[in-house]
Length: 148
Image (cartoon, rainbow, N blue to C red; front, top):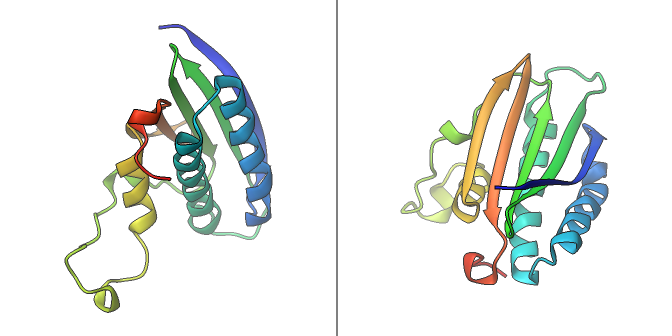
């Protein structure tokens, strides 16, 4: 399948960068003419992964960067890749939350990664040359997007 690079940007590890991240997602979505429902899911997933990296990947207060790139594969598949030099963490192995527990008894956290796994077609993790690499893949057709 043909791959086309769409957008890429490197962000400081700071939650204040979410607006710029959202702009990057919108830019890629405009290029692919993504349906609004899919744009909502994509933005939610990308913001969740970015937020987790900022909050949990780094043990120090030093500046770090997070590279986010997006490419089109074939006609309707969007691949989003995150790279950071934080401590190793594989979100694909995160335990799923117990949704049968009453809300007040559930531990805080874990719902974001669970949601990303549910709305993306796939999520993969690799540790490459001292970097975490998380890749999200999603078919950008309205019938493949369920939220929004």
